[in-house]
Image 1 (cartoon, rainbow, N blue to C red):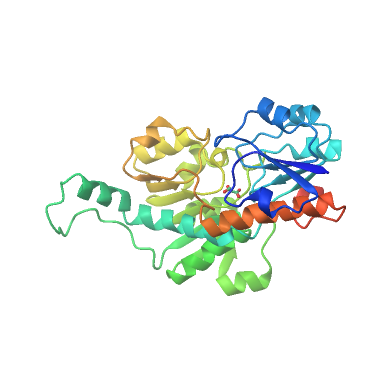
Image 2: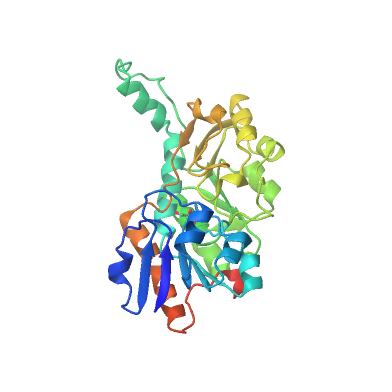
Length: 321
Ligand code: DGY
């Protein structure tokens, strides 16, 4: 019987949904297991169902020689050393598509929350300091007629662009390869160099994967090159933005505000950001709808079942295709 180790309780009952030929073991506590706990509890397993909080590195693979498949329950898989998996002949799959709208909704929630100073307004009201309507209180910025810059124009970036079009925004984007002409046409989106994206975006939303090319991509120089009064939103991966530099750019008044769902040293948040009123901070909720999280778990499980049955999985990560 093939055994599968699930590193965290998921929003579906994996044991009940897996076919009888697969033995499912689930980590017993509702916290990310350490590498040595995974190595101990997954001993003898053929596959792991992993989450963004599980570092799957060469040492773990070495400790688990029976593992042939890492089924990541997320679209991003920067926690998995894909090169080490390739060397060891371990398959890596992920869960694209099923969380696109959930994540784009959350990115746009942050855009609106920062632009309209939702956090400050709510805090004012709850503190009992609201003394009635004022023509000058908490004035924000309008989105209509402004420019959205999308850094990374894959599924989620395009879904955010679609939302922005509904708000009357112009769309610019930067990506490694250009989008097909019909996608550009339907979103009226224009591909521009990174420098132009920084200079022209009123709202800049990050949707690129974390890798060596994107790590630290938004540092002090890039933030300084952004349009004055712009909003930065990051729902991709924290290390793409230098949080200390972002806090400094906000403190200097160069940016209007920022919305962050992901952090450089997650779950820690840079202390200089925690104290700022112009920053909306969320605890990595991008895909956190019940439906999206269930689809993610089922997509990963379906690939684990395919691999266990000797069939090709549906969502191998691009580097291993
Ligand atoms: C992903 O899928 O990469 C998300 O960050 C997890 O919600």
